[in-house]
Image 1 (cartoon, rainbow, N blue to C red):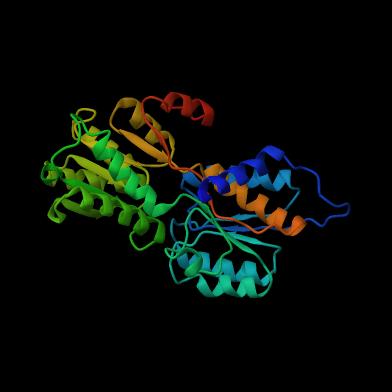
Image 2 (cartoon, rainbow, N blue to C red):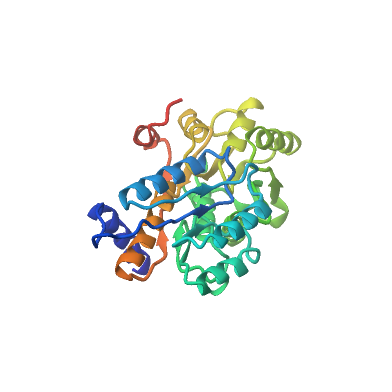
Length: 327
């Protein structure tokens, strides 16, 4: 019930469509967004659109900071320190490491600068970091859901004998909180289902599309018994690897996260069973809306589950049209 209330609260904020300041002569607030997502990562373009739309709607200023190289956490921390020195009105951030950003976020809070977390949270949530709220997908739960659906709903012929499952988990960024938390959820379900640990392999793939494909091709070539590929990130590795190895659509069950053009292609072609959408637009939009309302009305920010919606062959064309994603 609490999660539903948070989502409803967020939707009310959007539906209100508040465009004018609450008080005349209101200052222009500055809400920078500091992310670990690299400049080449297509997922973050959707977050950026939501962020910019919210800045415009609430007549605020802000800049999204993204590292030239995906997951450059030292760059992110140094950017954090530089941004904090300018004393903005509020900060939006990702927390891709469970300890690295604790001090700067606590420093900001102590300075009276509210900090909201989007997309990637501390594994211990508010107990592990002073951020005021998290706007994003529940990461452990989403990993559990991914594995559960892949095996119980999308596996050809119905749920298999756990001893006959040979699972590859592709790890886009081992060590980063979002990757480890999703892997935790995936593994939790696999163990509950009874899959032997020797039948589960975790592969560091990086986040580069060509590197992902090459590494997954290498693994599948050496382990032809693999019949399930679960990704902590985009499922393009399993899709492109299976296709390049001459596998038939559905011969290997592939599933992962997010809506990017290649993933939508893979679903339509039958190589990807489904993907879980976390609605990145909301992860950019809602933090700005919350910070603005905090400043203007004193509301307390709340955690928001932005989505764990499933996209498969039944709704992929509709989703492509909504996102205006072309082949």
